[in-house]
Image (tube, rainbow, N blue to C red):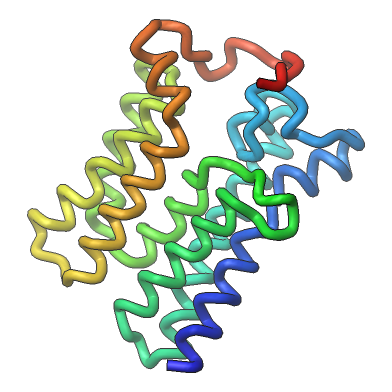
Length: 205
């Protein structure tokens, strides 16, 4: 139990490392949260800093999710509940990072790392559908929501263990909560499309 709690805590702190904020500070000396959509994630990094920094942010954020699940596996002897909780802790850390005043991103890249490690086949199928939807619509937010919605559905269809199903359901809830404003914009037809805008100052609400 002690090892499991420690693993979850470490996973949260790992998830709290906001690479988009760090890379934006290093590359341009700015706080990425004050620009574009105000989101500390790979998509906003793409809009503000370009493809190279965005790719680095995406891969590093995915790696956080993968590492968290492996931390849970290593400390618990592959207990799926602990692995799932560590993955969830990394996503929570990304969304509400202790190192950055609890103002982080929306957790999709880290989510990709977590669900791909916990349930590779369901995540792969959902991911392929997501890529197709983003390619057609150019709405990253729509694709992100679809990814998190389809993964638990495919996990249930494929009769995956309960920890994986419950974790994927909670991840879906996290994603929809974090994308509330995007959902409203999608319904209103005002959501930004991929590549449509770059470097637009973020207006504080």
